[in-house]
Image (cartoon, rainbow, N blue to C red; front, top):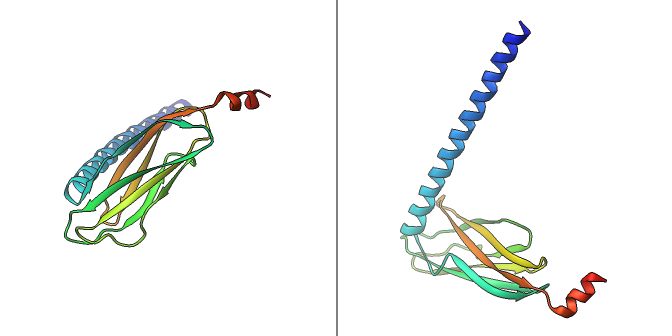
Length: 150
């Protein structure tokens, strides 16, 4: 009896995991379609990626991404999510009218040395979103390396 119960329970757990995996894949696919549809129809971006190159350790840098509202209605940025606390978004809170431009800035605090690649997802009031990326390499000066070792 216990063995049959365990087999049934195992079957239920496997079924739940498979269903969740298929659902997650469908959601990801739907989100990608929504992004492509929204970003190509309603908004025109100057770029989606900014490469800083080498930047100095413990200094903040900012990348600006400009977009134009090419739709017929105003659009609002509802939120901007980032991949870590070292990247802070700056974006307009007021609606961007049809034909007007807006700027989303990503401020990166170069705390950890080495290569970085960060992402931000800009969510709009029409349900679309746009992913933006920044990357570069944080360099530590020789004089700072001596301080780190001590």
